[in-house]
Image 1 (cartoon, rainbow, N blue to C red):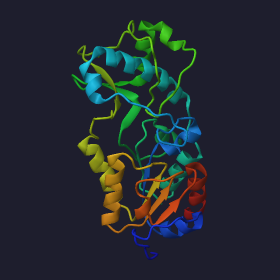
Image 2 (cartoon, helix red, strand yellow):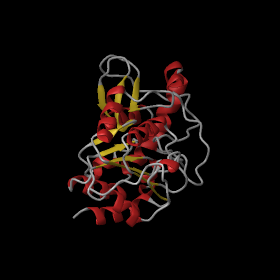
Image 3 (cartoon, rainbow, N blue to C red):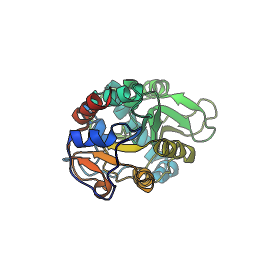
Image 4 (cartoon, helix red, strand yellow):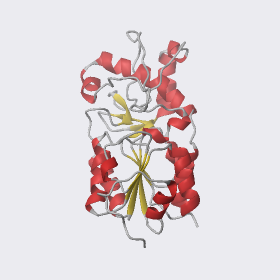
Length: 281
């Protein structure tokens, strides 16, 4: 196994530098919104991203009108998510897992594109938009079933003149007063897309699974994440404490750059594809 460059020796590097660091090692992978931009899903913090003030979990719980606004926007955004497909970056990670180079993918995204690309072991830290859960009884539903009920109750919602998609599957909708929010068909409780809202914690068991993937690896690749979210920083901390080499692939700065072994200021699709070509033997 190659000698590890210390995490303190952060440096801008090349594809070959990253491949040399990762070669012969079992790799854990953490992805963020930047890996899905090539699938047409925007990045919260990427260059040119407009400022947003996402709804918090507390607001969603406290006020029926907030829930109306969320469900109206989320429905339109989910339709766009569902029409998006995996890109070369997702497919490269799936091929790396099949070859035994990685032990799966930990993702901060909610678009389910890793699973659709063929990744077998995916830890969805923040949930996925294709599932809906009842906050009262815990029943889980397929999103398309809930969407069909929502469209039937609000036929105007499927004919927007223009939508502006956000990375969490939400869009802005102005007229929501007449909107009918679906209820749980089991208990009549409040339904929520099975995603982690701002102000809501990642489920303990889910983070434990992600941590176990990092602990069970010998290197960490972070792709398309600015590491602005605490869950990503905590996983980076695990790798640093274990003196694992860390490769960060992201356009622009991240909060982990000064601790990376190699930082590649580049797009994820082309970079992960090139890494797969070098690491799969």
